[in-house]
Length: 202
Length: 202
View: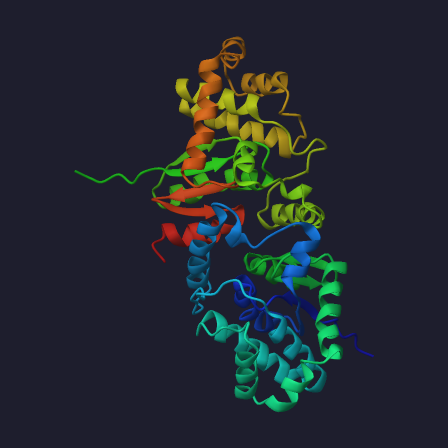
């Protein structure tokens, strides 16, 4: 019997720009080391309320810096990026859609998540709007009518609530947050450490 | 006439572990690109009061993570490190000593700063104690009696106060904070971006 390594957990909020950066890198990085990635959107606002934190853009001085750092980090990682006019936004619709899609078809859910991040951080579409989320889902091949019906149900709302509670239980306090065999990495700037960790270099 | 590039500003608090990491890397990195570095200790507590922030170790969840991240980051950067038992600590004595020494002898002040960081983050000595600061200064070749007298004066206290005010005016909100020709970089994890910036790669 061969031992199959557990998937890497990639926790993120769809409104997190550093989460978007990570989303563009983590799959290929993990694959180079024979690992798969489990994408886990959650609601960062729920976590912030729990720990008494707030978006970096709302902290004096840090807000101005972070706008600067975001564009420089995007260039550093060679990714297209434009800070959306409405930022940050609520991501309930996107998160619910993700978990409902994931329950049907993991590959479709992954395509939807990537498309949602790009729609928001490259094309500037307002992903807080359910209509926009449905549009993106349709573009990635989902059944929009069924999705629209599903994300209004308590069962699907509970999926996202449960994910956010699980994030807190796992110690997640920001986005992106990557956990590899219990080892936590916070922030897209930890990509080099993740790489070395996967290579067994620590 | 040749144009000499302005020195890089390296802002730090002596109680900041990521500041210690930066202190071990920034001079050599700058030198590889023909730049000098101006070391600027300041009081992070004064800045935190200004912006309503607090040490990461005091934030729920982040505190536990940061202890973890610190040891991993030290290994990643190939630096000796041990989180001191008393952490964080007040750094008035160290900051005042630095500015008084810098006014006499820049090279001596630099040696003192490096020795102070290593005394705290490698040897675990309590740099909040003036006696310890004087001891370190003596080990690096300073006149301890004159230093002890100087750091009790309002003139020297004002040097550190002025530096902290200047830090705030420059937009500094954390440690380490590096400013290169107006471009700000927060955190030891921005070393790769600093390197690319100095190489003209952005």
